[in-house]
Image (cartoon, rainbow, N blue to C red; front, side, top):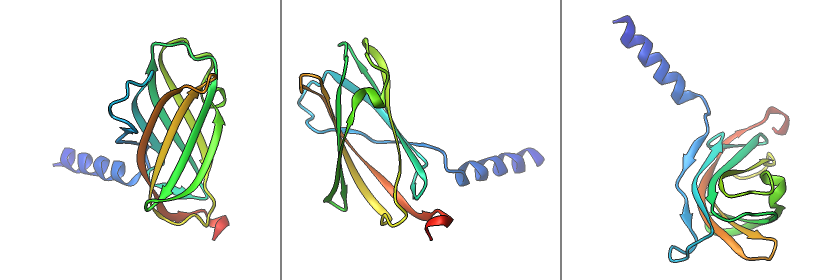
Length: 151
């Protein structure tokens, strides 16, 4: 009987803690054979909390060497484009990428006034020659929680 209670307590604890969550990823063009294959995206915490750091970790693999490039990120809120940003690829992963598995990780604090709800993110990765290496899209949520300092 005590073992069952312990298992239930552990399950309840796991459900309450804001662990990172893997999310479904779709390629922008399902017919394109991208040089960089994305195997998954993990968002931590999930849902993202306003005024708190959020990390998006993208697991990928490639057969090509990548010495540099850029990431272009577009965000939509309930289908409306609301934000764009561009990052140096080497600021988000270790360059050069010599081939094989690598992770692109980006952390950001969203302002406390960011509206809660469903968001869609599209990320395009380009090499130094401006060749598109991959294009993915995924959804994420921003929760109602915010930091005490922002309230």
